[in-house]
Image (cartoon, rainbow over all chains, first blue to last red; front, side, top):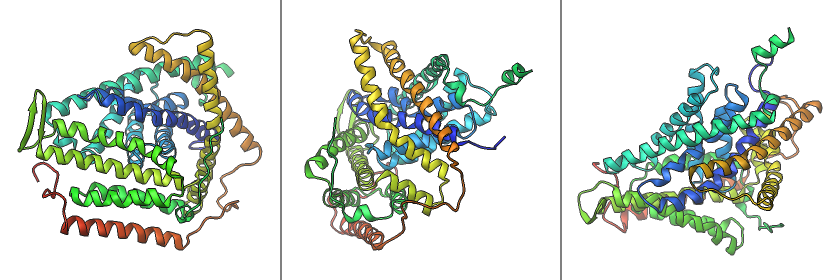
Length: 192
Length: 267
């Protein structure tokens, strides 16, 4: 078997990522409008920006897919003229790496809701780490910073953990995921 | 729906896309090290001049694209202004505590957001994605399978948008009511995401099979339809940015607008 990602994997990952890239782009103005409500309510929807990595990994289930998907989605948002410009690329790289690390820690063997949520949390922590330099968030009042932390992590769990998992589950019913997944043990057993 | 997106080609279009991308990445890191709002304001003026006069797009479009800049400014600055730490209190109202330090730090973040946005939009408006990926393959040795996947995927986006329209009409004509709250959000997400994703995965799979059937491979000594290299315009771009940065520092330090020179707390 060929090592690494094949053309099919890459093309499917990037298409998925670019769909989310379009959503990421549309998410920007929504985030802006919600944030005028104040008190970091907008952080609850921040989790959408981690979803590409999780969904792509849950569909294709191979090493490297999460990182590629998140970077490609960020690149997509960047090419479509996203409001955060270059910052998007750095955030995408950080978040993708964080999610990838979680999947790698479980040796790419787990595809459940828990692992999706953990990847979401890791991506959220990565984004907070970058925000420390980018947004001086360390200089916010402590209670306010804690709300930001909490809301962003809760949002990450709900959107890029639970929702991503449920979406991929319903996608499995359509049968398309069988096109791109590596053959599992059961498949080999069925061959006898 | 046909959108006219014609523009005049300027020298910024003729710069090398990979180089432009790397320069913008470096500027990002450099910008994070600017803590002096006076320098940053000059920097912003410089990038906005570049945006307004050298991207070659008509005025009306440039202004429409610039509207979100304002939103970026607000979202980046408000929570820091209202809830940031600082000593010199200007206003205290419930949880809101505006201090001189937090106010300027918020402004600084807002300006920084605008610069990032402007740099990103300058790149997006002056770079054809196809050239970008050809250049990434030629100058930065990106593997062709990644580059061509990207280019194929970008071509599919109009089809996906059309599909999304169709889905929207289909849901409407069947009288699907939007529910409120988190359940409603999930239902809406699902009703769009599942058909879009499944169709796109099928299409991507077919394209990949077709490409491999036509002997698409990872040979490094391939030929390219577009050959991209470096030109004097790249030197011009670097010179232009260097001038902006030097002028921003010089005027920011010698002719400051505010007396604050570092917006960080405890520094």
